[in-house]
Length: 293
Length: 293
Image (cartoon, rainbow over all chains, first blue to last red; front, side, top):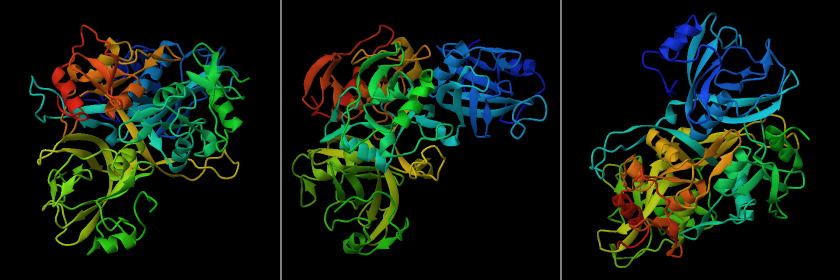
């Protein structure tokens, strides 16, 4: 079943459905079984949150959603795998900025779920993901989903024939990635003069400037709750920042850089005497991607 | 004078000032002379828009602001330089996502300017910049400034002592960079399987995915008005995307890649038979950074 991102015409937020079959016929959540409709190539376009995984957390506009797999009779009996098609689909949606339809079922969180059947609760952004040892003692993958604001659909100019230079009507695009900056982030970038602490690159641009990004080691926001302090921020080039945020790079306690796909050391972090890194944050980040050591 | 970003306490949007001296004493725009308060290291924190440059365009929430230099008696008599401290300051603010205070003077655009003196008109984001031959026949640098929405100040968790793992009060951060995605952008990335058309890198992340970005060649939005079509989009890694967007990379008509700082060819664009590039867009992008050839 092809993925269809966004709202489904005729099915506004708040629509109610008694059975999975109705959700499927409507195209709001296509599969009759399974919480995630997705795969690694296209992404995931919808999920059902219905209390099937006890590590789920539902705060209304923020959901910490447990991925697919490893269950028998409602309990985890083995580790989940990030390459499971549903889980990999949510990763792809995160990477692409695809918004995911969230459907809540009656057996989910009592405060935020419908009293019976299923309810379409709108579009959510996959902000981040991580693994951890769940309540049943096995590794699970979790996705931080945040309700998409109206401002998340912005405009670009489309093309009509070859009138490329005329302003034209507009259509929506999604945000794929947002990089933020704060006073302490700027300080880190200044100390390193814009040089990436992982690959040593400096992206020099015309106008006496260079471009670098501040990367939080322990991510900010629930469920990570990392602080915005010097000891928790790296100066990275955009490429290493992406790789670090998605677990393709992590650090050892002695600040060696590890490739998170092959789990091989590939170098060491550049340091600066005025910029100490706190090992607690390094461990928190590493714990999101590899078994706790 | 140190740069102070953001609103100045006691000086809300709409505040009126009769003279530059009052603006300066208030700290809303520190220098008594000059339209831009900035330098390449700190960025620019405020500008005055007062009709001094005839290439300026003021649409209220969108201003195309001409940089500093090259004028005598209100006319351009030589090219402007992007390394002029004010101009380089606006580039730095763009790179960092710093918001810039905009003050309009009575001699600016009749529709959007105060009837006398100066008015503080709030915080603007520097979205992009470019050079072009201005009305007087000399090269000028221009900055696209967009009124910052309330949503541009977002929250992160700060640090208190070593209670790093407690959620804590929040404080504002700016957006440094936003990457957008659309259906046609996705298609370009799929055709190239996430491989950068400039440096050939593939950023592989755990979960059977790779990360790449769609980069518009002729930028979208006024004053560029590039279309969101296949022929106007490149599949780039984040580093090459940043370099391309800030003029540190541009293309020749035969799709060779040029370093925009040293103006030396450094390679050629990878192509795909189903993804043709339109030379008009290549020329438009190049024209923003180098003398029209």
